[in-house]
Image (cartoon, rainbow, N blue to C red):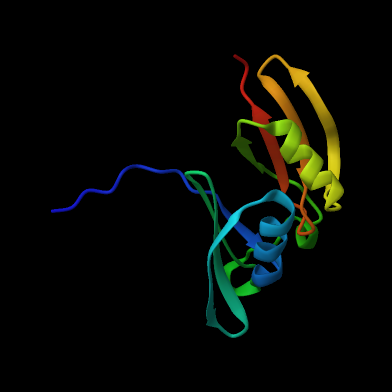
Length: 129
């Protein structure tokens, strides 16, 4: 019987999955894995950054789900470790990402905080050392 390595994969609710996937690829440098129609105008999406995967689905009343913008609240975020956070920050900023907190050295590494058009918070950090 095959075994599957344990992974934790964030699953985000968004209003427009194809648009969010395209934005994450263009602005943050994610790789598109898939955008799959799931019926009634909804989609499932997946993107990858290095070995990390983020999945997303269309927010829908029937599932009592909303994007942060729809909910008018920020309840979580995605934290991404990477090697060259300065280059990533420059790319995101020049592509028009909303920068919530400018790049700076913190006790947990060099980091910045951005927000995507759907309202999700994204934290990009190079760990210390």
